[in-house]
Length: 188
Image (tube, rainbow, N blue to C red; front, side):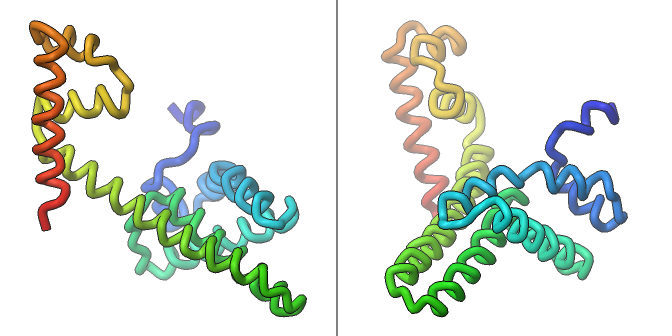
């Protein structure tokens, strides 16, 4: 089992426990796991590979210190957390550079990206809420919704899978399931 873990991305729990237990292996995996995502962001936002390495290093240190302090609460996926932290670090660097250069247009970009970070976090919270709503939905609705919207099965496939007499019946069931899901999702 250990061999298959070597190349895979560690789970959020593995990372947190690994950092708490001073696991060098987990830190190495963590470094490899999300670097490409941060590199892509930095390259798309006026940075280069060296910037990306610096920002990623700082982001991992922030995560490491938070976990070591013992008050780390993960409210989203670790990947999202690292992405948000690295974005904030890079935005801070960008805004410091633009202050030196006195270039107003850079500020507008920074504010736009800051709003994007908030939007990203809101979306992540919505996904968590949607997963919870799906869990409360029950069967067959949960599977029908997942098959259609996540696994991209056709209504014909769903019809056959659940034994509906025709696709219209399957569509009607999907519609009813969606209505129930909306009710659960939007209840306070």
